[in-house]
Length: 202
Length: 196
Image 1 (cartoon, rainbow over the protein chains, first blue to last red):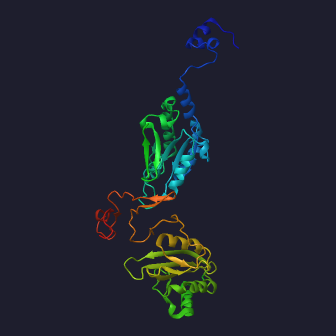
Image 2: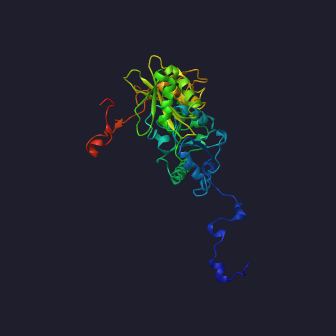
Image 3: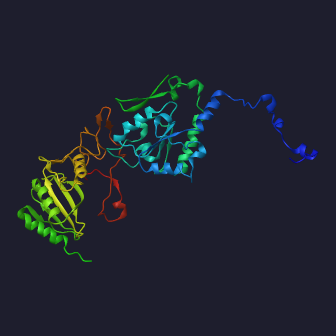
């Protein structure tokens, strides 16, 4: 170490100058419980890659080195729905696949979120067709929609950051069970008869 | 290297072997087509084309809905010979009442899935097919979507726990071009009813 001189001492900041004394506070950071839990959650959103069409190629690019989704803590693509937090629906959802997508969503453990990636997953896209579901929000509650055909990986990363902001604002303690959350954020139920997603008011 | 044979010669050999059953259609841009008059005998014509004429590859098997005409359906076989490099198209007509013709999956095994697709999309059955199930839509889907009388927006259907379909919003469409119109403004895709 360099010997400290008086002039250096006067200009150097220490932790004491920030009002944080490790001797007294013992490496403890004060925060709210839900802020801390949300911070844990939002920085490790493990995706369930629901790759159904060409958008999945951009999803893979987002996971590769040039765009590197791991900068945002979401590099762990889980092909098991039990271990994943956010389903990224990347591509055209056909009616044949719709029930399978719904079932995989139901197998994911709470809390869970959905990103609809690209025009097809958001609205059916260019497929005004007998075979294509006109938007995955017909069967799932979608948190973030991404425009594009396909979206660039940057757009997916932007969607992920928006989802992180949303997760960071969630009233987690009031909502440890989604059934007890406020109505606008209530539990979503898929009604098999009408094929619509309904919000169950608490 | 010039081909030792041409498609036309091979088509004439096919015609000579089957006489009245096979007729040569006018060729279009050097593409040679033959029509098989009786769809019930398509299998033996195809077997002869493969075994005697060397058409060992079935490139495609498709169907056309000539809605309003009788017979309604046309089944088209695109053949190719790897050794002689010649193409041949075989067509045969199937009426809507019958909607059935023999399979050629016993001649070319690749025809298995092609015939399933034709069955799925057009509703033409193939007698003697080893596994005639739908290939794209699910078992139990009630319509044949590539038929001309099936609407572009689809039809609602329901199969509990398997799949459902709903009408697609066409937003004023379908948007149809007029290829023969005099300027680009008139040729542009516009909302037109399919009959107009």
